[in-house]
Amino acid sequence: MPRVGLRETLFSANCFVAAMLALFVSFSLGLDRPFWAMATVYITSQPLSGAVRSKAVYRIAGTTVGGLVTVILVPALVNAPVLLSLALALWVAGCQFVSLLDRTPRAYLFMLAGYTAALIGFPAVTHPEAIFDIAVLRVQEIGIGVLCASLMHSLVFPRNVSAVFGARAKAVLAEAEGWIADVLAAEPSGATARERRRLAADVTDLHVTATHIPFDTARIRPTRAMLTGLQDRLVQLIPLVSAVEDRMRVLAGRGAAMPPAATAAIRAWVLDPMLPRPAAALPTAAGDWDAMLRLNLATRLNELVTALAETRALVAAIADPAAPRPADIAVAVRPLHRDYGIALLSATATMLAVLGCCLFWIVTGWPEGAIAAMIAAVVCCFFATLDDPVPAQRGFLIWTIASLPLAAVYLFAVLPAVHGFAMLALALAPPLLALGTLMAIPAWYGRMMPMLIGFSSGLALTNIYAVDAAGFFNSNIAQVIGVAAAMMTTRLIRSIGAGTAIRRLRRAGWRDLAALVERPAQIATWRSRMVDRIGLLAARIGEVEEEERDGAAAALRELRMGLSLAQLAGDPHHRPLVQALGGHFRDLTHGDEASPPPALLDHIDQAIAKAEPGAIASLVGLRRNVFPAAPGWGEPRLVA
Image 1 (cartoon, rainbow, N blue to C red):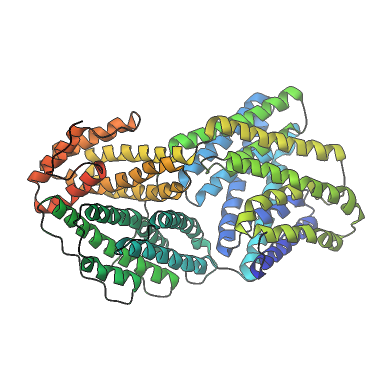
Image 2: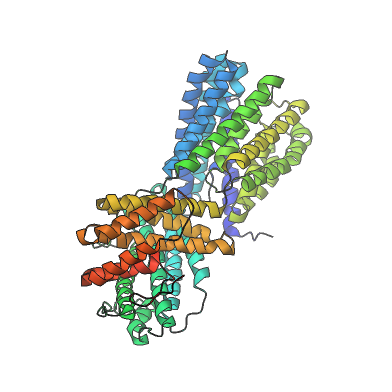
């Protein structure tokens, strides 16, 4: 059972008061659909005040854009139902496509602009002359709802995003330090795989939380550049530590491990930040393969110490925004990974779900068919960011159905005995307070939100109580049909597993690695996208089957390859090797994963034999990452 405390209770009380205030204002203004405002309060409400305000801004903007589109489309195409259905479906799908590519808080605006057109446009088909009034009413009701939610959560015991983010950043840093200390220990505990997965998931959570800080209620907030810099360095720690772990494991297996004293000072500093920062590890001179591995390890240790020191400085500055910002740490907005294929598949599934419901509506002439079409649009958009949206859509359907008996009891038994707003608020208090309290618990949010939406929509509160049993049951059957249509098209067209998502991320990485060979000057853009992919990839490692985790680990090696490749690409002496690597990555993008050709290993070995001392570390890392199972450089190879 969920644990409910004071924080959850206060959140629910704020939601309830905001919902009642939104209802009261809507009733007082004589608006036709006050339940829109009440439902908006719960849709907008979040435990953190900054998250409420960001959602409010983008919700009202998206609703306004969607309303304008319906005012343009519906009157022009109302006499051509098929064309109108196609136009609205294309608009919803197009907005969803853009929102999936944006991957910033603006994505919510595009999503709202899409399915708002469906929410307004489809029900208005039977009376197109009122489309402008309906669109304005929708904007008004949504505006009242978001305003009431923002006011309550900002003024009554607000919970600042900045403070929560600072505390979480400290916790994530502590996890990273624990992982690094374990890797550098004389006898690692063996828990690094679990720590890596948890750290990656926490970094992803930090990224989501950071998007709300610009809207926070805190007086002093960390800048967006500082937040981006922290996220970059946290995800950079993952491949750096994995590279150090790999080199130390290989050296230990060859009986050539570095003396414990070489890493003891670094480990002590990792465990106790108050100690002086350790001096740079001294690279050993390149000689045999063991010496080269130690050289590469020393180089990666230096990079790790620098990244961890920068991470600590940023965490300290973010946890105390009034403190001076570290002047020696460069931070910038970074381009993110975009998956055009998945975005297109998601948009296609949404369009087909909406068109299927519209076709059923047109053929049968069922008045509630409009509800099925608009619910299909909403449900497809809600969960489009997931690898496999179907389980979440199924949960939405189950909890929406669970809300119907409660709504029916209130609609047919409780509301007829209510007289006046005070009695209405008192009658609604028990279910809304209970559901709102559970909604504050992250594990229950996905269950309570459809319950609250279904309950609010089922009551359909207006200024005049009018109950229509047939309409109630027909509209709810239409909702079930809409969700079922969304699930079916998503299952057929869009659903992928974590393993498929990892393979798509790797394929995108291969394309970028091949392009980097031709355009090495774009290393900054490449690094930004690959750093983002590290977070996306590592967050999924724990979701795949054991046999697929080798592929995830290989992807981390590929992300490390690019750094070495970029360092070598500008040197004309290594041009043949770089071109051979580019050809290998291009081949990977055109087919299934295959082992690199033996000739590529010869290219690398020849490059190592002729390399200047400064390029040895990069070439050794490249060899370990491309051919992790190959014998050491200069050692005899077995002939197959």
